[in-house]
Length: 177
Image 1 (cartoon, one colour):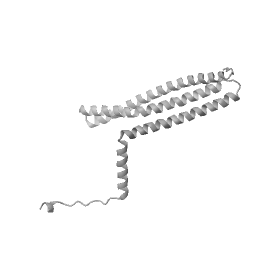
Image 2 (cartoon, one colour):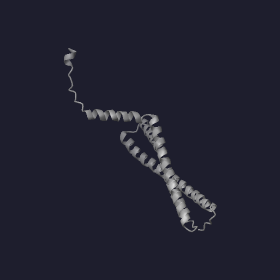
Image 3 (spheres, one colour):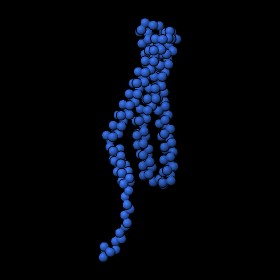
Image 4 (cartoon, rainbow, N blue to C red):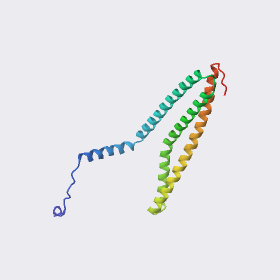
């Protein structure tokens, strides 16, 4: 009798593309949940950034060598090269800090929202608090990133200028500004 009372639900036909999409999305979710995946992604991004910065450094130094050999002992090529190096390394440091700040910011944001939920906040209030929290965290992260990027850019520009001028002076030429 129990078999007669059960109503058989019609099963929806599976489309092969849906199965492929669900399998690939499940594989992607499983892969991204592994710590090793994030470590490999982190290391590969830093490797790419380091390679790009090294190539930029070599091209700026070759441009500086060309300009300093062509011009009459002017300090302007050293100034231009040091500013370019400072800006590029400032941007590079901001990107590197952003790669570390995003996961930390997400953990902070989730922790605060969970704590607000445990305090018994209603959903509407929780959504409003979440929006405010997102704006505050994003604003503070951007401010810190810009400040640190500017500091790194200024330090690299000053050190780069003195390194280029000192390198130029070792060649026996006098640099006048």
